[in-house]
Image 1 (cartoon, rainbow, N blue to C red):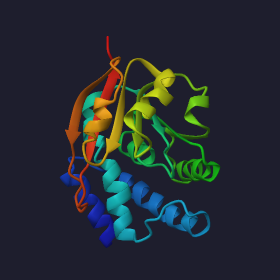
Image 2: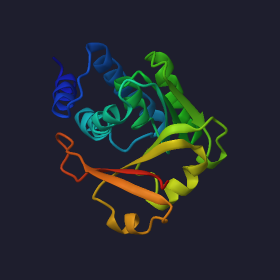
Image 3: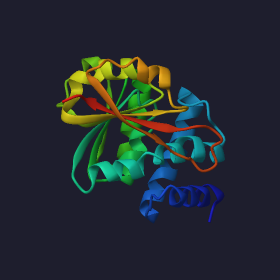
Length: 214
């Protein structure tokens, strides 16, 4: 087994995310396309294949078990804000085919890459939109996520109109941002802060779950 495939498979297992051979193929195909586009468009600063498996794929896969716990088998609509080259949106769409995932980014070449990757790798539940999130016209989403997009307050403020009633926000962060949590408006409930360990990554990671107070 090629080293990147072995690292991805073992890391996914350690995260409690079972991936089929087809899902492994799709995720590694995504990395190959990202490396190809990166030579022209500079979509990511990470260029070493082994580092890309850890910092892009496994880091994004760390959200999948919590998302499976939240969604169960129900079809849900997910928005990935400031998705860049499709992280974590592409990974979520591959690992959880019952979810309908939309990646939005204000940079056109990044949205174009996600759209092309979804088409080439036949990830039919993934969509890409070139837009600022506050200008989106899509129907509301059940969950809105981001990875290093903005402060929690800005993330919520920019996306609040796009969240469906009863929906939740899920922000991927490094160290638990206590100052940002303290600065959240009273109408927003930070109801869970979840620590995650990413195999091979020597850095703090946590997930911040939020919703509007009832």
